[in-house]
Image (cartoon, rainbow, N blue to C red; front, side):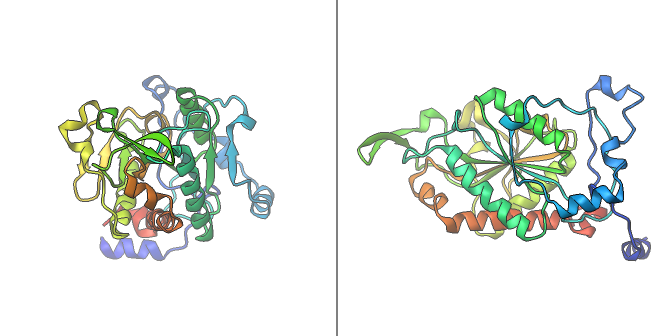
Length: 316
């Protein structure tokens, strides 16, 4: 069997235009009964050579701004073609910048919004991925208020027919852990009690297996970069914020309710890159050096995900 599999890897393989891995679009139970469920989307199968050549010559804009897209209707569920090889130039990665300019997320110990941290880090990750040949990487910047923006970013990722969805965030703590202090004459809050990155996946995602595998690769690379994960989410002191720790070695947590993880129709992961309410870690997260470390880790994880061995056998 091993010899046969090795021979398969040496055979020439035609990769579809989308270059997708075995990631399946899954709808609701009603959709599953529809006779159209198993048909591939025309968008995936009807590309002509001339169209492909034009696309290669004219790469798409790097940033997707949802205000310009208008209302985005979710496409009907369809099966993605299985590709035995991952072509980096065709792997579609959506880097979701967590929160918006209107709903900024957490506020750091030095009064900087989480959205600012998220945008800076996501841009650096995009640069690294593109430099490594993942030219179909898209930076997703959303506008609008909190909950409504979640559904807008999910719809945009689904309409882009992404293979991987990575949402970039920076962590804080529940209000009960906050302490008061002043920074540059302004009142603020901090908590130096917790620090570290964390990675979240949802079992409600239609491709949980791939989501978890990708999350594991990211978390292992974070550890390889010398970073520690945030262990507090597994502790009862977190109350309603406590999460199931799926791997105590890497720091991958289960968070089923997150809309961007359960509503996206592709493998989806959320990365809390570090705590910005921790005063020491906030300074590190503000530095170009830390952004380089994290972006290098994410890029290494994507490259590992794209290896032919992984595509055929799964992580070993």
